Length: 460
Image (cartoon, rainbow, N blue to C red; front, side, top):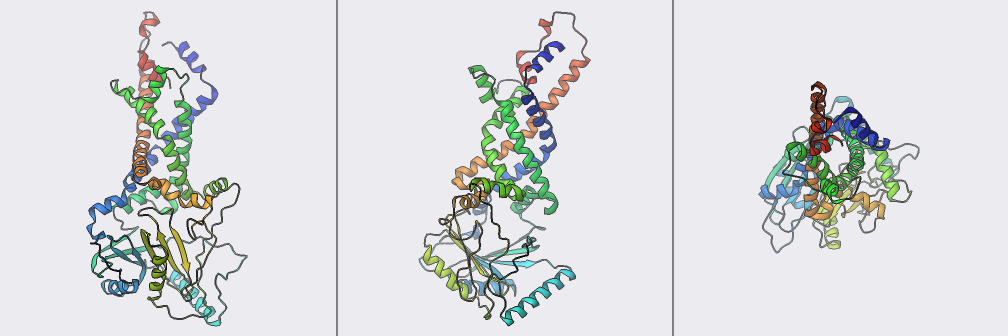
């Protein structure tokens, strides 16, 4: 093809499409490696629960026609196994699932941090004795600080809920993760410290959204005739490697685009506060997102020693109110001002439709705070329900196993797109170099035109 013909062909493309092509190429080359890592680790993480259920037999027990042991009874047995460590949570699942008593052992901190925490604890005790620390009482002129992630080791003691038999003890931490936690660390922060890796992932996924949009612009057929439709919707497996690679990038990218947009946009909710607030503003019709980062507070005006049997009353109350629940998790208070937390899961391996409660550890009164995740799911507003669905949409669990399979294959295709895209770009570079070094043919231009198939590949 002559230079003049190429120029004429290029000139037929609109400025909009040329801009989209430029963005698609260079943004893709710049963020490709990160997209591959995030996509592959996401694939691995999607079926975490199903894989663990298959390989970890201690997670299951033989169902019995009798009531579970109370939380206080399970904790008493687990405490002996954990040699003095303090339980932080108790989880009950389905009739054939093991109960879990959780422990969190914080990583030893430096002296200054410990000194500050001790001073804060002593101050709280003095206020409690004086009776001047009421429920949710805090200065109104101060903006609540974002809590830092606590570093430490989590121990899960799996127990038979009918007999109290200890089935297994599993420990993991961010520094020493199991396989799925390792995948999650890569997915969220590229195995870097979260403060560094998380923004990098967020920017890469934001770029990926732009790549998806420009990709559909480039994919859009110029004419909806059968021959062009076939090239846009079908992969020609009998063609050359170069053509198959192009079709895989073009066709698979189209079929997965809508799923990848949902996955990417829900992921950005955790990456950027401005995006999270903007998405809520859109879904709520202009209402601002209220994010109360402070935990609910128990009333400490009349402090009594907390007894673990108090959680027995909570579990019995919730089990009576939600007899069909797939699971109930109770979190234990650490300080006099901490509430007893409770999560009631309506369906196994999903989180959006759970009910979340906080109870005063003295009176067991329900404590409510303004946040999309508090209270019963059925009582939540539409934008709050959408926000609760964010994680389950991200992993496909909102559609059950079918949704997870779709999320898996969409993520797998997502991992392939930077690779097939790079091969397309690299092939164009090699082709253009050969074209420059080749001697000018003496025969008519009609005889040296590239085959139609190759010409089509090089023109996108």
